[in-house]
Image 1 (cartoon, one colour):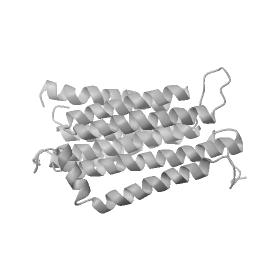
Image 2 (cartoon, each protein chain N blue to C red; image 1 turned 30 degrees about the vertical axis):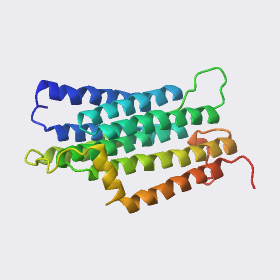
Image 3 (tube, rainbow over the protein chains, first blue to last red; image 1 turned 120 degrees about the horizontal axis):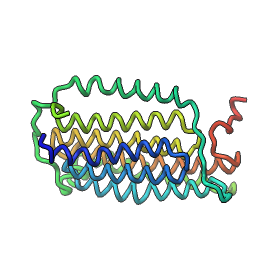
Image 4 (spheres, one colour; image 1 turned 135 degrees about the vertical axis):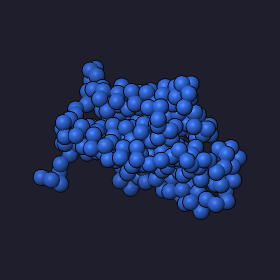
Length: 166
Length: 103
């Protein structure tokens, strides 16, 4: 990799990791949500670098636009605002850090052991049109099942969070 | 770092992101904080899928990543509904204080 190619990956990667660390370490719940937004938008940047422009757009629309807004609503609806910052507690930091490091070490073993050098791309990176064709040909059944699942999840969410019993 | 291939760097970043999510999942006591950590872990999976899409070409991996994004949205909607119900029942979303079953 040349320095420029490396920078294209390193800059979004650092932003992703900084955002993720801020999400799990920030004491203020609202700050956590905004750190998460940074991590998700930086992920879209990494997707662009990896020739996945359509996914980058979907990532910004769905995650940064939808999920972060939902999370802010969730914080506002569930926490009593009393003038002070929304402090959230954390516990078991040492135990959590040990388990997280163990997970990372376990994931590193196959990643560093595998040889990706010899594998060449069999096909070029897909255009959005290719994705659309794949959705409506090979993956049409999962696609329709996913639509039903989304409707079921939305109706379920409304039913769970509804104020009064029928 | 220069001896690593592009895909390996992406996989390592995703592994680190996943581990940070695991740490948040284990240490957060706030239900919304736990949901945020789950988002980080789901995002790490998407990075893996896109990295392998870059390696092998073809639309399949990106289609899977789009499915994963849609499933995450469903998960967040139901998760937040449960959190709202939790806050209405116990007046708190600290998961340590909702311990009716454990006595």
